[in-house]
Length: 140
Image (cartoon, rainbow, N blue to C red; front, side, top):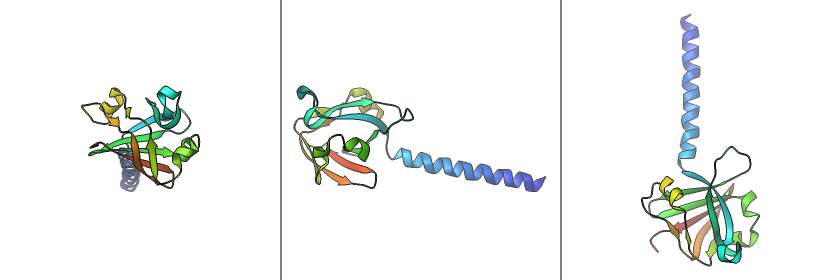
């Protein structure tokens, strides 16, 4: 009986440890979002971000991930989404023809008490094993 209890306790501890590891990997990226690339006034054509919208993971498909880290916004875009706008993901920088204001609800979910704006211009972009990571400096 005592051995069964110890084995059960061991399984519970392993399960909890796995949950913590998974939760920690998701904690690094605060918000799953849908992203359309381009410029809104040009019907989402051109270079930049046309739309960032709220989405819930688990509904099928892939999503981008958005995070606020200090004075930077990080946007991770999977290859499957980046391939829809190949010219935007060519090189080591992401170019925005105009600024984009993140919807206030999403800014709040990232922990900001004010609206967040992604400035026009060039932003550092790196290729990862899963896609691309773009860094937007909020100090501009």
